Image (cartoon, rainbow, N blue to C red; front, side, top):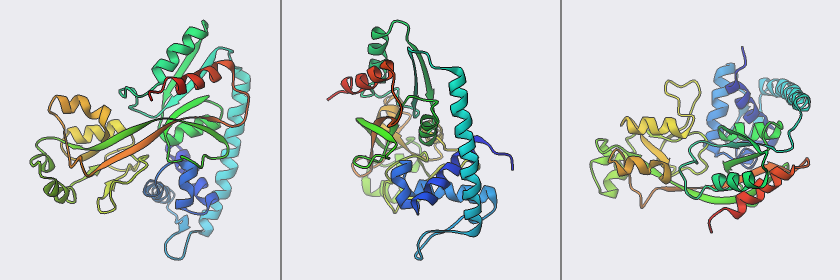
Length: 305
């Protein structure tokens, strides 16, 4: 098979699960929910056409094929990370240069301190160069650990147990809720009990890196990269919701413009709400530059109380 970025992402998830000894144990390292991890492993098994691990009442264990895939994955990722480090050394580092990674759709949140932190850092360093990239959660951490990003802004599940190779600073909380179009069956009634009943018959879209399942009784359709309809980020979930085919789990700040225009309405808002904790993350190792430290501190001082 020819490896794509999707395959590399899935292999990194598999490596974390195998090394942690299970899906639940890998949540802290990956920062994504157990259902999302399970969906990623199932996707990788489908792409490789092998069963990688046993899971269930008997506990977690790698199959023989899974052990072989893990060995090759470790070898390949070690080479890739080594090559990336060498390329970074060849390119060198500008003294007033910072590389920032963010997950998508944070820009519309007034609580997001990134813009204010950029303003403060730019005022302090007159020759400042800034590189900003929008990635999914796992790619943010992958790029950070590979030395291609200096600081990332992500929604993380950890509050007390931060992966040992990372430094994390909590910035703010982001609330999400369920939305649909007024013409969707869930939008035709304001009765919560009726909406809850209709939800169980609806397609619900949530991007694959959501940290908190809403309710075990509701089936969240997580992103599968080879699915007919991709739901890999917040925008794709919003497209499906605006089209009326799905109920979408969308951040309140991001959904507000369509709510104000009447294109979207909340679904059982008193019952279903998800809170994601947004963190700034950098590597524990290394020597951060003055620019990185200034931006890191500005992020925290710019965060609203």
